[in-house]
Length: 101
Image (cartoon, rainbow, N blue to C red; front, top):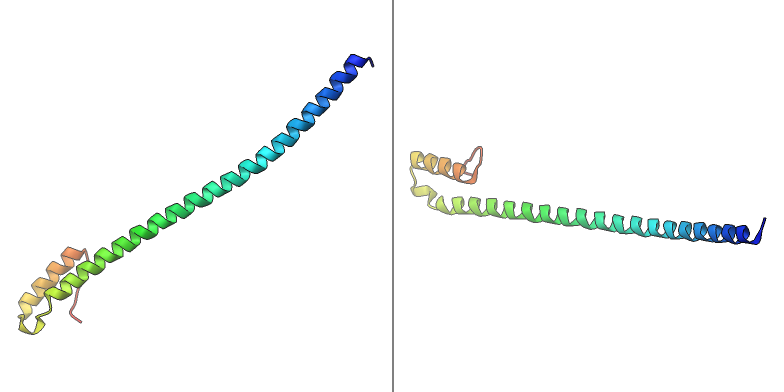
């Protein structure tokens, strides 16, 4: 083997080795960054859903409290008016059934 071939072979081996090491480190870094990105995305989505559910529950609670205030004079209301108010409250809050408790 002549000198030129030996140099070319050594340089090729060093290039392959350095590119392999670079590839391995790049892969590990990309994998770590991808996992962090997915975790952040899932965390943000779950936080957004939690906020949405909290807002929905708060609005339903507010509607029910409003209905309870409208029925505060329960002793003075006739049964037919009570049923009409309950039907209206049920429609307003999007409920299926309502009752006085």
